[in-house]
Amino acid sequence: MRKRLMWTLALGAAFAVGATAIATGQIFQAGNIVLNADGGVTPKALPKKTMAPVTVHVSGSISTKGGGHPPSFREAVIDFDKNGAVNAKGLPVCKGGQLTARSTAAAEKACPKAIVGSGSGEFEIAFPEQGPIKTTSPLVLFNGGVSGKTTTLYIHAYLTRPITTAVVTTVKLTKVHAGRYGIRSVSKVPEIAGGAGSTLKFSLKVHRLFTYKGHQQSYVTARCADGHFNAKIEKAVFNEEQTGSVTGSTTLTGEIIKTCKSKG
Image (tube, rainbow, N blue to C red; front, side):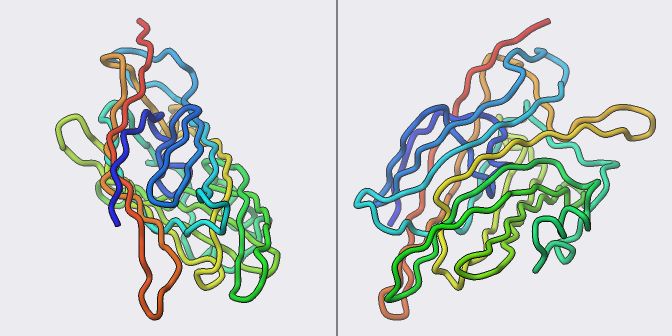
């Protein structure tokens, strides 16, 4: 089933939750899915011509109209404004295998210098013939390195009930030349508890300053060239419950606009 939405969103929020862009204090619905989201970029005023360091703040929740167990978020493809950028050149790298099957503390110990953000998440596990169980986890973002035009980002979560498991989401950020858009984000979210787990809430902050060749760098930068940022959601896929051997899905698409203030 395919639903279409028009979202007013903040630039760069996709970097924080499997490439999901976030609106400011908005509620969106498609099919049975309800997304309540908030977020933004600081500082609010940015240079018109030069790129400046920014911090991305993201929070939100996913639920259903009927109040039941929400479908699981599995994939997103989003194009972002060319006036925002991700810069990981010279930043220490963490490999995906260093995060698999590790607790939060063990993951942070394995790649302390590759951390580019942090936050928290709430999840719900609903096994067949059992009541849903809620659980929480810290969220830690790691730089996965740069290859050609593509930067990899890992988002690590670690659940301890009703099962113990690490969940590592992979985000690929690729430079493109598509008119207004300069970055294509492709996120792949693994199944949680064999498909029985879903995200309920999330809160994240993306920010990292580092030094490369004697100069201070920022992981995320942006400029306010013409008073707004644009993004285009090609698809955001939520898996529904299985019917026999078939799994249905709801796909969201939409356009994204967020105003900004130019200075200088």
